[in-house]
Length: 202
Image (cartoon, rainbow, N blue to C red):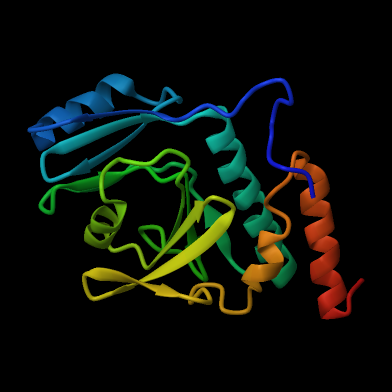
């Protein structure tokens, strides 16, 4: 498939990121209240460090491609898969908050997401594993340089795994083939076709 490039005339830009040290939980809450529902930036907080990140166009394109493919997989497999986008996830006592690229509740309804997706487009930033562990997220998916890595929560840390525990029948190698694209709709259609061929429903 073609290389990811939402606009052929545009070179991929880095994410914009600022980290403010020594910020209180109440300052975080105030910033979230001021921002409201306006899109454009994502916020993370870890024990006094506040990250404000403005994702690039390519960052958003990659995360949306992965989301659309996963949602197509869940539909084809008949899996309960509820998406909450960049939901603000917070735990005041543990001083942790994050707004993932995408997050999902899997299997049945719950109060908080089971699975989050993070696109690592620009290096740096807060330790998202420490944040998500404190928020109790079962599984973290990370895309970086064309590869997807999956991590599962064990006690208070994440361990790499080769197959998703939340979506155990998902073929990660097959999914990877359809992420690097400049046509999301065509890629999702091709992925659905591949899934149906494998299940004998084509």
